Image (cartoon, rainbow, N blue to C red; front, side, top):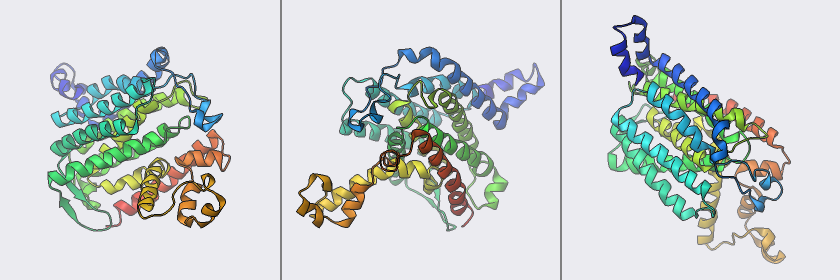
Length: 373
């Protein structure tokens, strides 16, 4: 909105033209979102439903019981005024934003439900919002994809692009949701991803000379998405102030689904969906690998192998079980649960070490995916 208002305001005071600067809008959006979330969250979290804990995880699973959950609902609506003010939105961008908030709403309703929703119900709703966001991304940004390691660009037909993009959004949304189990973990990892991705969109994909130098397709609309990602990042920073251990409020499915989907959207706007492995490596391994484990175990069962946990089998059957199955059952997912229960890491150690892993892996993978072509 400020972008369009600058044309009318400029006649009254020349410096108002700076509101057409994407760098200025990025800074304003980030600061407004951080301030709004930081100030409003403690005043409103008493309205949220309360977490019931996870008795299945024992003492650790009950540490969150009684805390306000679904904080993502308040965070996303607190950043909405900053988004609307700072971002020069197009109709397709508004469509994507609508489905992002749809994903958040699905998560919040699940957080607020007395009985948590089943996997099938949540999975189908996730598919619907993912398809809707993928369609508007295609409508607003096209379906041109560039690949790592090779100088090849492919304009994907819409009927292939939309379902493939929807799968990526579904995956990042659920991987981020699965990573939400340690105070500050999902938010901190996602904040790093949002900042790096915004800088890449603003300084590379959205800046023709650098895009040409790196042999990356240039998109003028990329700068708009940099503003959106950094504005949401500001909101995440305001939330993390109150989510630092011991947390005062929990993100819940409402926040983790929103953040997971916006990461997927940002990756698709870069034009290289494979960048998700460079931009969110720890989140994908921590949360996404658990989905891969379930799929692999089901495939092995289809092949006739025994896939039940060895601890539930008679000794003679457990000894004959496949080594791969034993290995899969020996690693808990999400991986932060394995680190806490098997390696005896504290929550603070999990957070610090996972953030360090992401901070070291991201630039290495990023250079490999972008520079080597």
